[in-house]
Image (cartoon, rainbow, N blue to C red; front, side):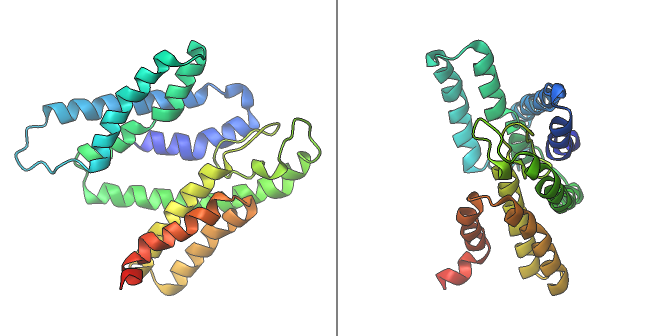
Length: 231
């Protein structure tokens, strides 16, 4: 799990940005994700605990969706390479989802993962500033309708001569923002600390000018304060 989190959220983005010839490196972490998926399914099949909690509903939806999606590949008109890339993109980290839902994990490990994700969220600001100040001007007036601002993707994948996963960065930051708001509301962090964390998370969203944030921010606020709205 640590390798997947570090490799996908910190390593591969900057690596492909500065060394695009290493574009096969992300496949290593994808293979880890598929291995984790198999391990989680094997654990579920051999777990004989009487007090085993029921699986979340979204896991059952995923179980139905997975073979259906693979079956649809038979009707695809793309090449085998394109189909394999599609499977990689779609399911490469489902293993993490299944493992978190199936395998019992102690609270201390979960707290460490949460702290690590928050650390990654804070890394997006210096990386986004570099991309905005240094790399974005280099993309001005590029051919093939290259959008300069798309390079602002933080530690997520981006290409100097192509597009960038700025939407993925925005989605990740908004998920972390929900976590900070929840900790703030539950008084896990103080008001000054919470405000500082929120500011550091929101700044990369502004630099990236991602339209997804306009849709997801209200959803995030509703997720945290929805009970107050219902009252």
